[in-house]
Length: 169
Image 1: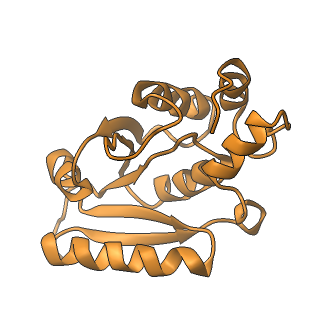
Image 2: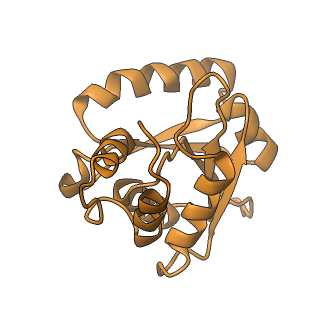
């Protein structure tokens, strides 16, 4: 048997605008599957974000600091193609979370495009727990803006951020 000491590194990319408990569920499970997981906030200049990239990075760091078994998780950010970032950090896997069947078609197209461009990088799909299926960052932002309690859907640090920064969605 060959001794393979290469670390299994995965990138979990997304806008995380804001990070939700569903995102953290996927991150937690991914961290048990890989030697290192980098949750990476995409700075997409063609898409209007609710929160600045650095705020999203800091909120993820704050959200995971007290979570057990996440010593192998790093938080980063990037611009451009996800596969270029994955290559840059030495990752051979991308993590993608699925909430519903409707997510799958888009994610499959993305995965196949990435596979055509970077065959050395695979995609691992993780399905959220049923209790998180309906949670999306967009719904969280809208509920928060309308004055609703979103603490069931996002970590405490995100709730506090949303309450402090009432930005129209």
